[in-house]
Length: 155
Image 1 (cartoon, rainbow, N blue to C red):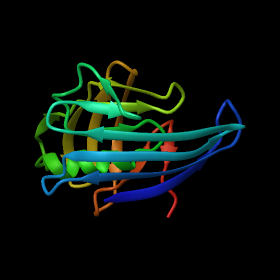
Image 2 (cartoon, rainbow, N blue to C red):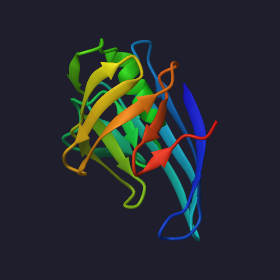
Image 3 (cartoon, rainbow, N blue to C red):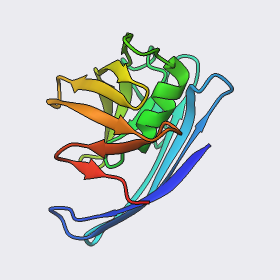
Image 4 (cartoon, rainbow, N blue to C red):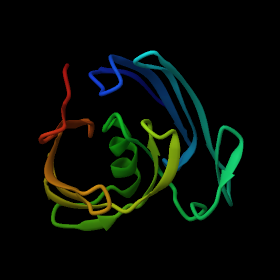
């Protein structure tokens, strides 16, 4: 299980969000939770994946049943789970579309994304629908260290 918290500046005011993502033994997402606040707005989301569907707060989100991973828009920590499951070798490219939870909209949609492993600690990453492309740096444990222009992990 991946658990964490993110505190960040947001257009709606200061934000503080706790999250968790539970996976099965093959690193496929089973459940995620997001709780906290954005400005003066409370957020409380439950995301679940079964063999056929993804559900957001109990409501089936159609068209996502083929996706294995949950990607949380406000933290790159969930990229760790995708990369752990796929385990690409240096020089290998993988397409890892994910169920993308957009905190701003409180929605779950498909996020096409691909990684090409450049070295043991760098990946060329592209998510064309957002749009975003950059070289991501990861720590030896696999957690993202840097999303250039968007985020940098503090240790």
